[in-house]
Image 1 (cartoon, rainbow, N blue to C red):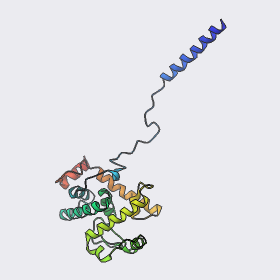
Image 2 (cartoon, rainbow, N blue to C red):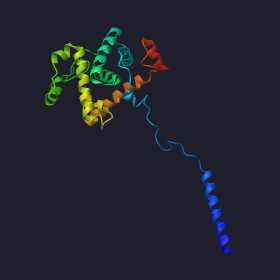
Image 3 (spheres, rainbow, N blue to C red):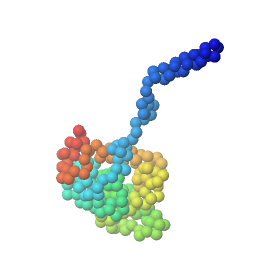
Amino acid sequence: MRLIFFALIVLMIQSCAHLCQTQEKPKTAYQGESKPVTASTEQFETKSFPNEPHVIANMVAIVQPELETHLRHKIAVQLSKAIKKYKINPQIMVAIIDTESNFNTEKVSETGDFSLAQINPEIWNKEFERMKLKTIDKNKLIKNQQYALNKMAEILEIIKKRHGRRDPYWYARYHSNTKDYKKDYLEKLKLRFKMLASVQDLTKKNMRLKSILRDKQA
């Protein structure tokens, strides 16, 4: 009799526990956590784009809409050649150039940075010599825009190989390796990535500036 009574009590406890579980609210996949990062926003720099001049020209138009059309396309063709050689994502190069010089081909900084890529040959030549690479020609850097963009892509390739595996924001080291400077620089680049990510289709051919700006506002 006692055995039957004990068995009944156990069954009642199990039934109560099951009922309590079924009445709990179901948990969402990200309850108490931030939403996952999407490739179209925070990870835009990792997104693959075709290395085509018209795609790069669209990007330039977004970050620098006041740049004349013929200059935009000239830079896009030159960037396409540099990217083909050194395998750097076009949006990274466009964002860096806009941050460094606003696509001003004649800019010279107080610290001795030249061209729209703002390369300091005095600083980088020390590294090129250490790596036994051909050093940067200052005169060519100033006068030859294709040369300047090729050197920019080469520098980014060096940085990527050196830091890319451990640092997802390796490209921000183009400006500085110092933590605080790199952080501030990265915020400026992210602002440009956000501008680029706001456009629905960057690969569209013959995209006029008005349609690009309209897409951004949509």
